[in-house]
Length: 300
Image 1 (spheres, rainbow, N blue to C red):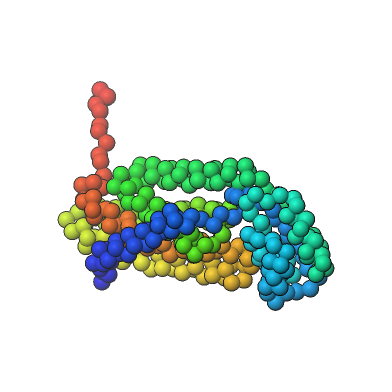
Image 2 (image 1 turned 45 degrees about the horizontal axis):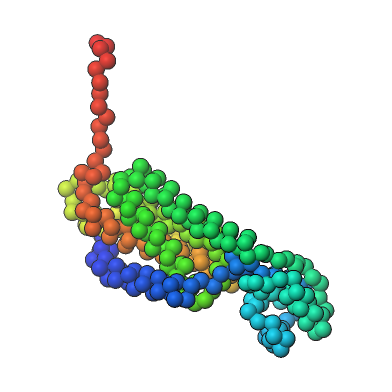
């Protein structure tokens, strides 16, 4: 029995278009909440002598001393706290933080560092260049591995996944730092892997069932891959949700980015790639095995 995935392809395209529009509008008007890695600033990590139930008391103290635009998180246990002041912060901000905390808590200073804006801009530019380079390399690989129509579909899927991940971080004002950038690169790899598996099965079925209709053959291929895709995605999501719940604040945003990316990557490998193939009129002739020419070398 074949599941008629492509029966809902127009609805899926509408849904994708809506998500992409929301993501792009948010990125244009809200921008990303860039983390300290990109903006520069001060990072102070302390280990309190006592556990805290929440961070509201520390927030109240910092607000009273007119220390604003900070990011306050637990960095592991309930007594490990990290405080970030992004932007044009300098060492005086770190001293003000320590004075406020020393007046109210006993703690050990674990880390204190200043990241200059120039370093932050360099990381941002190199990160963006890395994303574009990854997309280009993936496109070239798929074009030679399969066929250029698959490469177009794969690029659309990868751009779709990256925009949705980044757009959701912008929409919900979640801190975007180097760990999230690493997650986005991992999402590209995951999405590409799913796309290659689906594309390989479609190509195989096209070569076996040359007279089948394109949509019916794609539905057959997706049905055959459904079990593998679900098992891979669900097991990956179980690990990511475990990291999100038990991993602490340090990898929370990393886990969120990967969760969004895995869901988007699984979806795009089905509806974005296959919709692109249908739109570009993929046929069995496009995937036919080309016989190599034989040249007479004069031997008997």
